[in-house]
Length: 252
Image (cartoon, rainbow, N blue to C red):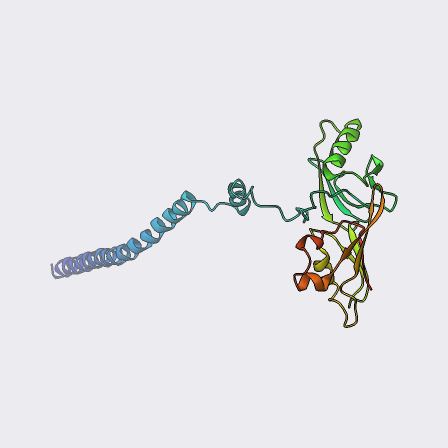
């Protein structure tokens, strides 16, 4: 009986130990779960933020540079382009002459558009059209001529003639001035203005007998001008005539 009693006590002890071990296992597992739950919650927040950020960025897309320029193009259409030729304002009686620089512009045809210099024979050379007489014509007359001749190669041509440099219109002054020689006649110029461009009269110049030579259609003519008389108001202001291309002023 003593042996049976001991075995029962032993079984109870083993059972109680097993129960305690199981209880300890449950408690440890519960503590581990409690420790893992707080760590998992912060991990969910970055995931939500990372999912939202791409949506915010994709909502507003930056406009490419090319599209920005295109939308602004209509407002800048009135401004001249960087390749627009620089032009001079010809005098009212201007006709094209040798050594003048012209810009011939064919709209929508860059191969025909070019800058040309009028040759000594009065002609210019253009693609397809070859030699075209230009000297003696106004820019408008040359434009009409090029438009008509280019119809053989271009459908409905639109031509512009721009005068870039005027080298054919010159006046000459010789004699007792500081800088004698030819001067370009770009705008209205009087005898006194030409003398000023030439540096003025020298000390021993005869300012009362200045001579202007001009070639008219009827032949050569001459005009007398008194620089000193104009300065002292002894002669009319109308004697200070406006020069024409080809005039020669002689200061004795």
